Each structure stands twice: as structure tokens, then as C-alpha cells.
Amino acid sequence: MSSSNQSIVVGILCASIALAVGSTLPTLARQGEPAPKTEVRIAYVDVFGATLKLMETERFTSRMREASEKARTEIEPLEKKLDEAADRIRSMGPDARGPEAEDAARAFQRAQREIREVAARLDQETNRLAATINMEAYEQVVASADAIAEKKGYSHVFVQRTLDGVAAPDSMLAALQRQLARPVIRAPKGDDLTPDVLADLKLD
Image (cartoon, rainbow, N blue to C red; front, side, top):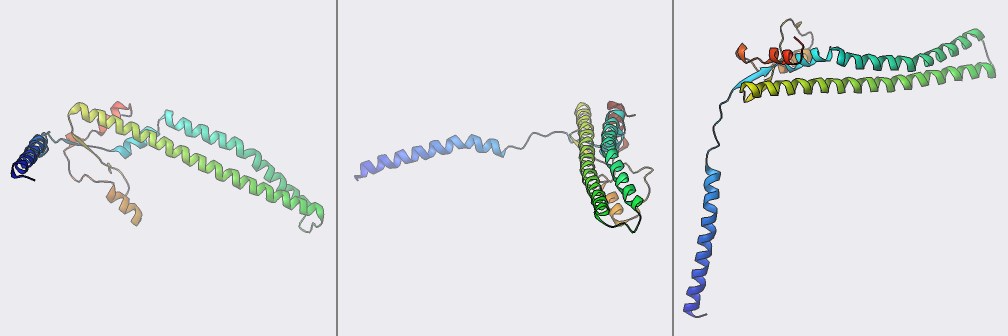
């Protein structure tokens, strides 16, 4: 390649590099700029206590009560069937033998097995409903706290556990739960949004 052509190629490369660097400089400058400063204001809420209060209201307890009544309706006939099977065995006496006694024993075992299976299923359904209700109440409390914090100009909201009137822990697990329940060691009373949340959810 002639020296003149080499000069042209070098010139084009230099121009391309200059254009590439120039186009990236504004982006790099923007990336290097400090983030806009916002005022840090911290509040805290006893989410656990508010959630428990909300779960004790009729709108939540009625659902658990209905589930309990439904379970009772389903289990009562099975209990009656089990009692009848037991009465049949007792009526034969302790020395009963033969096909009838064996049939009575099998009927009793079937009734026992059936009531255990149904009771286990109902227990799972009740626990699942309780967990669902707990999460619904928790989410309502968190949403209320978030809206109140936004309105009052708080940038951060910590979860706090109020321990006033709570009995002393009686096990290592209870002591550990107590320690983990208080992530905020010290904070002004004025930054406690719990009363506002309780008022918002009509729990005060």
C-alpha cells in the first residue's frame, strides 16, 4: 500500500475513533454524575401487632368460623360411624370369634382409617386458610403503612415489634424470636406510624 493510501486509512481510523469516543463521553459523564439527593426520613410500624388485630376482626374470623363449621359437618357422620362400629364390637363381648367378629373388626378399622384421612385433610385445609388470611391481613397492613409513609414524606419504613405487655420468653426459641422481632433499637415516638395504620384500618 502506498504511503498516501496508508495516510488516508489512518486518517479514517482516527476519525472513527474520535467519533466513537466523542459519542460515549456524554453517557460516561451522565453515569458519573451523583444520584439526586433525597431526604432520608425513617419511620417504623408494628406490622405483626397490626396484622394480629386485623385477623381478629369479624371479616377474617368469620371465614375461619365458617371453615370450622364445615369441617365439623363433614367429620360428625364419620365419628358416628366409628362409634357404631365400636358399639358393635362391644356388644359381641371380649371372647367373640368367627366371621361376624372379624367383619366387625374390619368395619371398625375402616372407620378409623377414614376418619384419620378426613381429619388430616381438613387440618391441612384449615392451616392453608389460616395462612391465606394471615397474608391477606399482612398485605393490607403493609399497604396502609406504605400509603401513610408516602403521604407523610417518609423515605423508609422499618418493621418493628411492640413488646409492651408481652410476657418474658420461656424458651431459647422464644428468646431468639424476641431478639429478631426488634430490628429497630431506638427511634423517636413521633416516627411510629402504628397508630396511623390502626386508625386507617379502623382497628384503634
